[in-house]
Length: 305
Image (cartoon, rainbow, N blue to C red; front, side):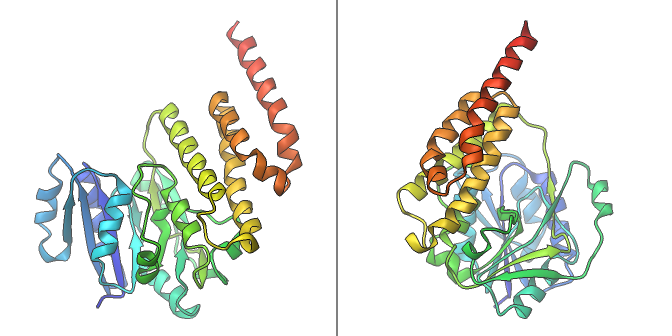
């Protein structure tokens, strides 16, 4: 049985997938299996994968989104830990060995989370250097509420049995399915945040600003609804920790939307989160956000005249 199962969902990214897999095969840690879940690609992805032989296990499905694809990988995983990697991102040679060092030094926590560096051209990753492994341990994920850790699937290593226990990712096509997963894993024993070295190169793509903002709004609205319906673990005793995390992200996203003149989305998030912000409370946000929206809207109108 391998120690790691690397799950890579992919859709029409044959060329980028080749680079991603090359970064996997360059790992110092060798105790792993690779599962690529083809999410209904129509390019030459399957031809590329066929050339790799037994180095990769290929799973196929009709196009259903990354959450469903990752769940297929979780179901088929034979490793003790599942590590997620997107098909356009890159690992450094030390990534898996650093995950394993943290796992062994911190009592096999349920969730280990690394850090990433963004890039558009691969040459930018040459700036990343291998630093000593340094991690912050917590009793569980919710216990890290006041430590503003990054939260994204591409930097996660999670015990396979825990992923199956919470039934993996939501099958819904939403942004922030990784945040939702982490909340549902929130009370599982052991969480470690790897502060150094950097673990993942996160590839940035040019895209529609409007589409990205709408997707971010959709993901935050979903999480607020899940909390409102009481679907995250920890009960009333851990509610404050959940709200610290959830509302921090809500405030950040709503301010970004104001900066990009999407007042409709920003105000919708404000009203959705209002009861929670009153409960915490966050008076600076509650009292300052609406005037900020009004000032930015007025300034925008004046500039257009």
